[in-house]
Image 1: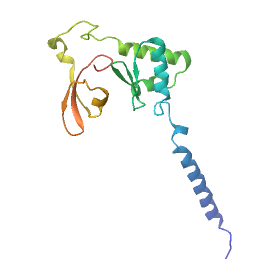
Image 2 (image 1 turned 90 degrees about the vertical axis):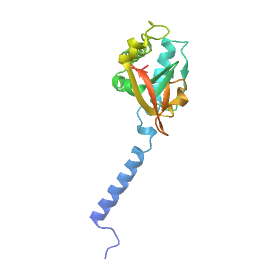
Image 3 (image 1 turned 120 degrees about the vertical axis):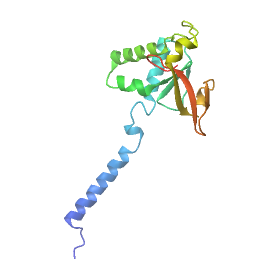
Image 4 (image 1 turned 180 degrees about the horizontal axis):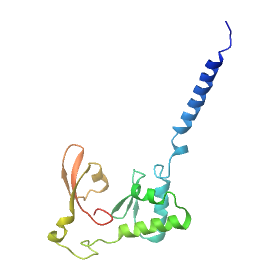
Length: 162
């Protein structure tokens, strides 16, 4: 009987150690996190908002996939895929264009044309959202649906819900 492991046992052991080492790198989180999930993209968008609209109020949000700018909560999960492969000026212009379009006053808002219920009812939508949304937007029109969900009412605009 040999004191040294067989060649197949050594290959198994070496492969296991390699896999274990690689697994710890992959699951370490920050090392391989993308810019959306670790908050870098939100910081980039916040810098662009500050440059474009210095008086804008940017509020912290616990979700790195969202940013609150004034009364708008912007889901960065829609924007990030559009600009992830861009860099430099192209990336900045794409982000600015998206934000400008998104934050433009919609018809029926105080700074837009006033509209009646009759003119907006075809765009009225019902949404089920987690109750936690009320912590961020307590003024949201809503009613209870369950212990964890609420029903909200939104206007379907071309590039956003209002």
